[in-house]
Length: 470
Image 1 (cartoon, rainbow, N blue to C red):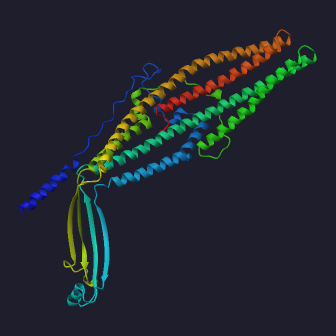
Image 2: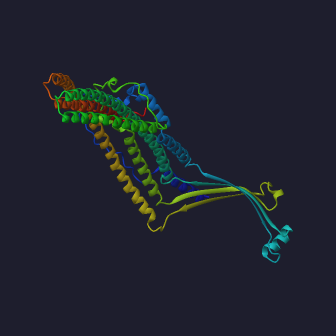
Image 3: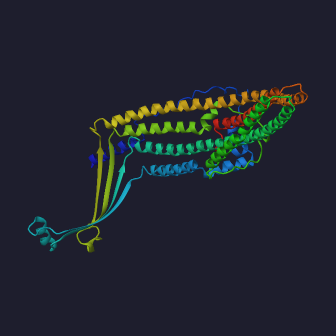
């Protein structure tokens, strides 16, 4: 009795070490972050990323497109299914400490040879030519989590579930930004199409004047030909821009989960104001806001868990398997209690001995993978900081470019008026008129492109800061 109690105490002590870990987790490394973003405003502590996307993108037509993309985009639907799958896996992992229970009902009918030992036994004791066995049992198997393997499996499942949620957030952020940039690109193309058509009308008017002067003998045929070529150049631009509009509308339709078709535009490019100030906040906020950075951080939790699981596989496992039920050779006596009741308890300890170094190799590989995960986390933080810095730099420099190009457009528009007036009075050549028209066309196209670039830079800053998923 004393020996049994000593064994029981030793067994309980062995199970008590189940809280210990056979491997040491690697902590999330301190991210290399600047005190403030490059090109950020001084004292900028708030962040536009905290704004819900409907507060950042206020145009009703754009909101409809984004809503449709979030609801119907096929990549988003796959992300939702991935979350469901990870949730089921997490629910299964939470049952890791529970024992496996099996119910078994069996009937065994045997007719042994009459001259065999079993046959003689059956005739002497059962008075039958058959040996029957009716058995119903309930089996239980429970593994003691001595080395934290089950705990690591739960930790891995939880991190994987959270990682799929972060992946869905990252996808939504990119989709919101993609829809907004596509919409702004459409508005730019609309503006450029209007510019091209207006310039084509201007070229047509100039060509008529040059033809009249040619008929009067004031200009040569070369002047007419150059004016015609200038008009054809402007005319070629119209179907080219119209083609780009169709392609962009189709791309936006597919992004929103719809068949290719036209896209409604509520406002023009000029109706969208460029924000004077956009708060980027402090770099430290990226770790908690950016879904891809959070996903990299969770990947380290998964890597730590994998190391623990593979390390635990090198150590012995203890499994306790009690079993009990009813067993009788006559079914009518099956519930004779206690005669038909049986029970057994089996405890086993399994220690890997020789598996061609397979388990140790898996453990070493998991350690290497963990080191790679640490590097990938640092890289994700660096990439995030770089993207924010790039967006802030674009916003700053595009603002300066727009001032210059707007001034150039204004100057060239006055130049066209002067050139036409001088040409009509014979004080300027047709080449000066054509050159002025070509210059203003390109400058107006450039101005529309820069305005779209400013809006896109705002979108990129919002996305790179981790906005768009709330």
